[in-house]
Amino acid sequence: MEKFAKDELLTKIDELISLIKEMPTYKRYIDICNQMKKNKEITNIISNIKKKQKEAVNLEYRKENTSAIDKEIEVSLKTLMEYPIYQEYSYLQEDLNNMFQTIRSILENHINEKIK
Image (tube, rainbow, N blue to C red):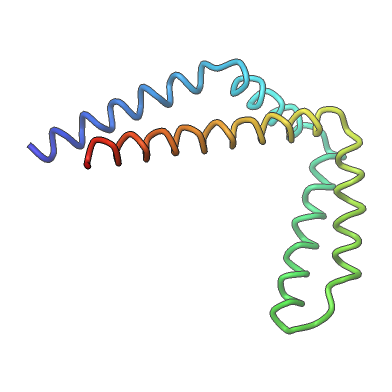
């Protein structure tokens, strides 16, 4: 019985994922991700930001000042936000994250109501 319930639950989760993948917001997000991967300027800026973030973490770990690297990251992020495609990516990512949080909250609340 337990395996059947798990399989049924996973099937329903797959159905939810399929619905999400058909949403215009999700499709546009994937399209933009693919476009950005092809843009060398954007990928270089993102790679640089990730590299600087790692450096900042290492400096923090060694209890050293990170203000210079933090400033470099901030400048790079501002440069990145000058690209309209990245702006749209950022907004869509936020929308999708909010949607996922809402789904999570709905599931938690529904389960809690049914268990009580």
